[in-house]
Image (cartoon, rainbow, N blue to C red; front, side, top):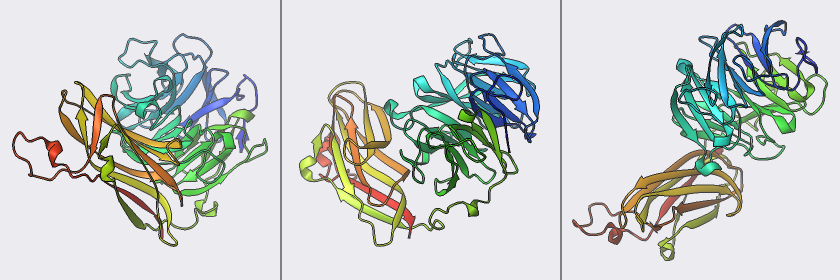
Length: 438
């Protein structure tokens, strides 16, 4: 089923960009170029609309995202002026926060929203490359920041929150999906640029069903892809076109409690509705996920005992018949000396390919110690997506003014006043672990 066409009258759209579902199953469509919110019942019958292009309260200037608190039916709408407005389900204005308000939260260009538990809202601020969690009143609680502006996420296209407070992020610039805990811990991520399974081209929509399966609007590839919560590919449908089941730049996506799927088919200026999908009928992800584990231990040569940074490259040697899906890295006891006072950080970067390859994650740790003092760093990165035969490059880079000495302490083996650096073995241990199909 579908409804809508190009226009500005009731039930018509001009580039519908996002949509959301309330507790009664009603559909709210963010009509981007018309600067409107249009509300429909679950079968697409028109109910009401509000907005219009303006800077005053209750109107919008290029609205970018919509989300709904399922407990209160409060509707949140972001627009490009740097504000988020909240409404009752009939469009009655409640409040506004962001750059056009005097509240604590200040926004540059909010482009994605996700309603979380306890009436909280996640807001992605693209120009600042961060995701903030705020209360319904716009009071700041916490934020997640892309690692060095280019690592964990960049230009978030869409977000969705779980009942426990985790969030799934469609990372449109990096063509991947992140699963993050409410504290920002990376639980899993997957995807790369391309047209194959688990590959994306500018994903701009993401949704969850009642079982926790993840639906992604693969916008540039004109299709929808479906995954288990851990990123295991389940299937996809759609291609470019205007007939039923085809898309032109699909963006917002939502799944109601009974499994009905709604897609904002932006380029075709319409909403498409699909009945609950039997995921067993979609192209399978090879076969059911049966975990298997391999661990690869490497060591740094003593000749590389110190310096300003180090690049490690390796191709995982996998046993016959092993098909990796995820990997992890453990870095044990990196010793950092400080040549200048102040805070010093150490960044772990993981790239697919050589040192100039695709950055797929980075993690920065920071500590403060005075000039001449030293400190220890360790990293434990879990659940990044890998493919058979991948070459990974691991880079550890200290902040300017610091040197790395690779090693592991010999516990209780130095006297008071004796420099710890003198009790470091010249071996830097790390583990590369993969798990997947056996």
